[in-house]
Image 1 (cartoon, protein in one colour):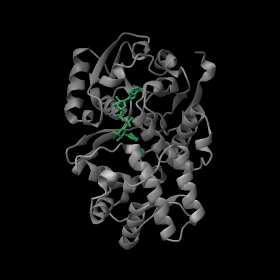
Image 2 (tube, helix red, strand yellow):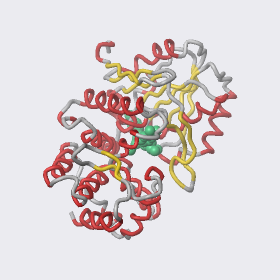
Image 3 (cartoon, helix red, strand yellow):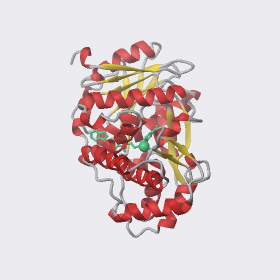
Length: 354
Ligand SMILES: NC(=O)c1ccc[n+]([C@@H]2O[C@H](COP(=O)([O-])OP(=O)(O)OC[C@H]3O[C@@H](n4cnc5c(N)ncnc54)[C@H](O)[C@@H]3O)[C@@H](O)[C@H]2O)c1
Ligand SMILES: [Zn+2]
């Protein structure tokens, strides 16, 4: 595949920026990216998961210099401190130096985990991500938030550690399970309300590039997540509550599926608060429908007490301890603090009934 199919989206940061390469065949640029951005590297530690390692294209991922492959279990359960320790020990046994590089090849789980290991190993080793899931390409791989989960909660231990480069090769998505497509589209849908209303109508490569550029712009303006970056959490306050409730009942809900529901909920809540009209709620549903998502309240959680969801939303760390939501309105999407619990509950009832 020629380089002309690849779009370069720069991420500008205070200290140094990096490029995100988007397009079919972009993973063929990995060796060049490493040579340019981590020229001192003499070897690479590739971190991946079992499902990704089994994909037919995996053997073609070439860092261009000697490398070892370190495989973790697939799915969220790989994001543990135990795996951080195991990977650091394996890197050490492989003789990986601080001037070498880590390459994450996988979805958001692998990029969060490997990025965090890179942040810790030798007090900071360069890393690049080859994002292989849609969710990772449009969100997780960009922005330098890395970390792992604790039994007490998701993403509780982590670091800001920016990659030296990111590759979003849309050809690699062809082996992704249908459910992961839906989850990635749920995450993608939020960008339609963050300045990309035509997103559902575009081709996949352009969609990914647009989402990356949106995320890059927000990350550049708020590298450490103290302001504007909260907008990327559109639809996420309920989504996080649904994910937490799902963990409690042993259910199965993908992150982007929860975000799709959270987007409909955010629209219903905004209407209830007089911030938007019916047509805007309809636009939310239309965007989701175009992405093949219903945004309906998950049937497996129908029995969960709404007060319980409310308490999760009040605890959402990004809500800074009050009931705060990112909501649509006349000025576009913005953070709204101190939302009345009655409105939050009423909108939940409304969501559950539709
Ligand atoms: N750091 C951030 O800014 C950020 C943002 C959003 C989400 N996240 C994190 O991302 C994670 C979710 O990411 P995800 O949805 O990519 O999950 P994931 O990494 O678990 O990938 C989903 C599943 O798809 C498989 N897979 C991935 N690519 C594949 C491919 N091309 N072919 C076949 N199978 C493939 C994986 O093995 C896995 O089983 C969560 O842990 C979340 O916290 C981080
Ligand atoms: Zn998300």
